[in-house]
Structure formats: structure tokens, C-alpha cells
Image (cartoon, rainbow over all chains, first blue to last red; front, side, top):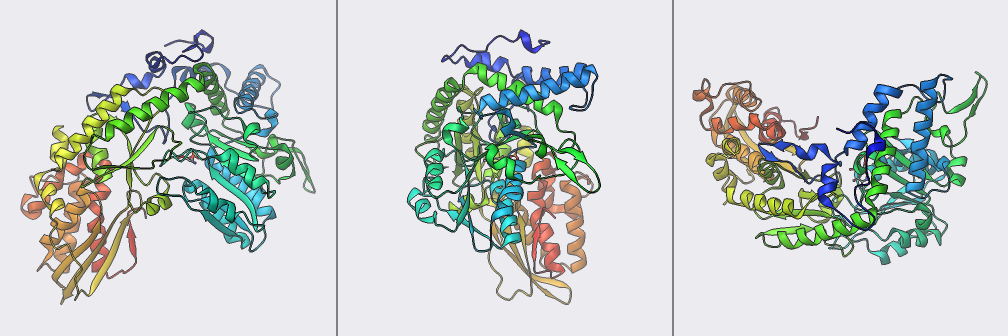
Length: 420
Length: 151
Ligand SMILES: Cc1ncc(COP(=O)(O)O)c(C=O)c1O
């Protein structure tokens, strides 16, 4: 294993994508499962980690471990610099105006809850509405239900069509003066649909409605520019973009973040504390109470370095090619139905087999070393919309190959045979 | 692959394909609904119990092969059993699928249920196999609310 981040050569040059070189960056891809080479197709749940990220975590704990923002000693300053350096990397990664707009959170879920509690709950009144879509992850449904329960506001759901696309005409109609907030998933984890969020944000802004974008599935597959999108909030999780678990980002426009009350109270989020009065810290620290996930943040910075080097435009093109290949390949499986056939899709194939339950498919193909997800993927309303209890889902990342798709198809056929 | 064979025994595949007692029981006097929110498996169990003896049993619902076969085999064993005997069966089945019982030693009590011994090698599937049995227990106790594997 290589020792320090500095020794990593760029994986691919701009615009060229060499999957074998990318695979060599991910140590776990060398392992076998049930005696077969691991074929990891559960990337929408969590992605694998490149050696660079793993080494960064190791180096941090071996050489720099310390608490941040509160020590004059060498290690504390070093850890603080790395932690804040990662914030800068994340800020440029999504093109925020300033690193102060990058709030470290545990992940997309915590980011949404923070906005629900500190922003929406503060200003919404009984009878007013929050708009989401029918394809949201539970993490973009339940926090709003909690707000509605506490405030008497209403949660409204924009329907999707049979392909798994948001019906924009319905969305337009639902943007009434009652709506005070819109929260939308950028890319659906269960269907793969890429929503036209830029247009949808513009439509909401025409009515002065702020918008949160759940980018959990977006950042590892294509470039994101929050200024170009003009979203008011944007959340994502480190673990789905080749970084560690337990760390993620809430981006918010400073004009909103500044006015929002803190989400949690504690150390680091204050300027001064007396029993009579506490003065809150400036952005972003106002929202980062307590000792944060320092190693996680630094590891996430390293994942951003990785993504910058592989060139996300090349990744996007490569994954689109994988998606086209996989979509064609599964057409040869009798009785297989794809759930989610949007025109604009990322590399996710959710499917049903006639006569074989997703759970049984999952177990059988696992014996071939193929890891997929089966179940409702934390999107029960999507399952209800398509009238299925669950699906099997193969979700791809930049290290997957066409050969792996061939093995996937072969093992699906094997599952069918067991049940013949 | 050999482990897979022990999971998907012929008995299991057959019961999945043509489940026994797969209908609603019109004269049932006990009923419970079982739900596994993680995979969406859902079954209704109906019983007709008289003087603490199960006179009739049926089930309805949908789920994976393991959960459906388990419900079907269970239903085929219950007729004529006392409440106490049924509870004993629930107990051994649970031990079997969690690997706490040696199927060879318990063969007599288990009968057809021994086919589910392979489940213990697949921890992710234990809940599938147990769903109908949890639901049976609720029906015997006449708890009419939904039994969830996640409680
Ligand atoms: C679209 C989407 N939103 C939100 C989340 C929640 O992410 P996390 O569990 O990392 O907070 C996920 C993860 O499954 C997701 O796929």
C-alpha cells in the first residue's frame, strides 16, 4: 500500500477513462465473496473507498489526531488546518460562494433534518404547504412530516409517471401561494431518474419559494454546481462518494444560514457563554456543535481530491455507457421488468422477475459474489406507485465493468433456473 | 453453491410454487397479520380454534420463497394440534433457523420442517422464515394488530 497522499498519480487524464486503473485504486475489489471475485453493484447504498481515502484516515489517526479549533499545540493546529482545508475542497467541489456555506453534518439525512427544524419549522404556518415528489427517499419525507405535525402545515406530493419521471405540469399547478418550501431528490436511488432540478428550482423561485436538493446520489456520478443550479440548500453524504461514513455536507446560501437559529447547542458553536446570554458563533460553526467527525471530514476531502482527478465528466460518460449496456443485457432475461425507465437516468437498474421474489434473487446471486440490494430502498411510496412490494436493484459506480454486468445477467438466469 | 442448495430445498421450492391452505378461512375465529417492513413480505394467518385445538388453518399474502414456503409448511402441520403443541413447534422452529437446534436430533419433532435447517446459514433470511411463525403466535394469542419483524 502506498503511504502518503502525495504519491498518488492522477488516475486518468482528463476526458479519458481507464477502468482498470480506477479498479486498482479500490483495495476491496481484490477480495472474493463465496469463493468468487466480488462484484459490487450496491453503490447507491454506499460506495467503496479508494486506498487514498483509507490511507488518509490512517495517517490522520497515526500522525495528526487531535481536537480542533481549541488548541495552541502543534497537532491541534495541524488537524484544524486539514479539517478546514477539506471544507475548502468541498466548497470548490460544488462551487459554493464561500466555504462558510459548507456545514459538516452526518450525512444527507441530518442535513435535511437541520433545514426542516431550523429553517422551515421556524417560518411555516398552519395550512401552508411543503412540496416533495413521489420518488423521495424516506429521509426526504419523514423530516417534513415531523414539521407538519408540529406546525399544522401540509405535505404535498408531486406525482410521477409510469417511467418514474416527475410530472412537471402537475408540479407547476401545485406551486400555489400556499407553498413555502420545496424539497426534491436530484437523482432517485431506487429508479435512477435524474430530475430536471435546475428547471424545477427556477419554477419555484418564480414564486419566491426556496428549494432544497437532496444530492445524495448525484455527487459521485456527475458534476454539481450549486450556483448554477441556484438551489437554496443542497445535501449529500460522504459515504456515497467514496468517502467515509458519518460525514456529509449541508450547503446553504449564506443569506438563509445566517438567519437560521442553531440546530444543536454545545461547544464550538458559541462565541461566548454566560448563564444569562450566549452569543452564537459565525457560519459555519453555528451549526457544528460539539467535537465533529474530524477524521471523516479530512477523509471526505481526500475523496474529493480523488473525484477531481478522475474527472467526473469522463465518469458520467463511462457510466452512461455501462447503463446502456446493462439495460440491453437484461432485456435478454425472460420475464424481467425494469422499474424506472426515465429518459434521463443514472446507472441504476431496479427490476422484478416474474416468479422469483427480489429477496431470493439477492441471496442466489450473492452466492456468485454479486452484491445487489433488494427491498424497498427506503422509498416505500415508489414501491406503492409501481405496485410492487420490493425490487432488486443493481447500482453501478465508476469501477464497474461490462464483464461484471455479464456475470450479473448470468446469475439472474441462474436464479430463474432454481425456481423453474 | 452447496449452501444455496441446502437453502432452496425441493420441499421449499414446491411449497413456494403451490402453497397449501393458501386462502382466507371464512369461519376463522383467530387472525393476525404479519409484516416485514424491510422486504415488504406480508401474510395473514387465519385459525379456527375450538377447545384449545386448532381445527383449521389457512394463510394469504405475498413474499419471498422462504417466507411463503415456511407459512405453507407450517399450515400443513397445525391441524389437530393443541395450542400448547403449536407453541412448542414455534419454539423448535425458531431454534432450528437460528442454528440453536440440531436437525438430526430433533428430526422426529421437526418432520418436514427440517427442510428449513439451511436458513441458519443465511442470517439475512432468518426473518423471512420466521415471519409466519411470529404471526401464528399472535393469532393464537388473538392479537389482531399487525406483527412486525422490526419490533
Ligand atoms: C436519494 C437519497 N437521499 C438520502 C439518502 C440518505 O443518506 P444517508 O443515509 O447517508 O443520510 C440516501 C441514502 O440512501 C439516498 O439515496
